[in-house]
View 1 (cartoon, rainbow, N blue to C red):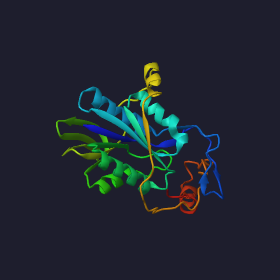
View 2 (view 1 turned 120 degrees about the vertical axis):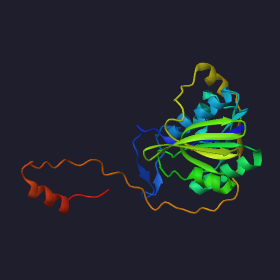
View 3 (view 1 turned 90 degrees about the vertical axis):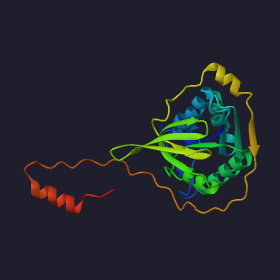
View 4 (view 1 turned 60 degrees about the horizontal axis):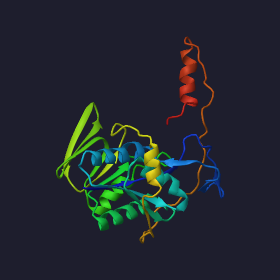
Length: 247
């Protein structure tokens, strides 16, 4: 079984965020980028576990981005992925990314495509579903556990009041959520080996841009608390009607 793991380049959570070009572009200057945690901690690590158990023969990373993302890809290789593919293009939108992933996976016979449930910068949670649709494959979304026996995939998903168990046959697309695996840290041997592992650079295939960014805005952050005396019910009701906001 060949596994393709899609990884995204996202700002570290400690990064100070700002925007340029009249708030229509993210300012990358001075930003530390990392592998999207859902891609790294759950999708990639579970793929590596499947290979270590003898259920997979190859784990390939796939990233849509420019050359400045190579350090992020190398970290994934240091964790244990066999090789990587980089589509040499700036990510236009989720559909563009999904088209590049699906086209490459179909052309190269990958049977299990793993993605994180979402990226921490956009929180769209849409790439996995789009990949499944474009490849005409079943999607197991928000999987918290995953196993493969012969040609069958078994997964668990959190459900209202319990756990839902899903079974289907390969090939399949799975979006991975918390619980799928435990975070790993690259060791020195892995870091050294990653230096010589191949990163194949391919040009993007044709794709239509379906969305555009109108503007970015920073979160207003927390505001001061308004304390109301426990005996003053009328004031509380008045404030709830006039000042409270539903989010």
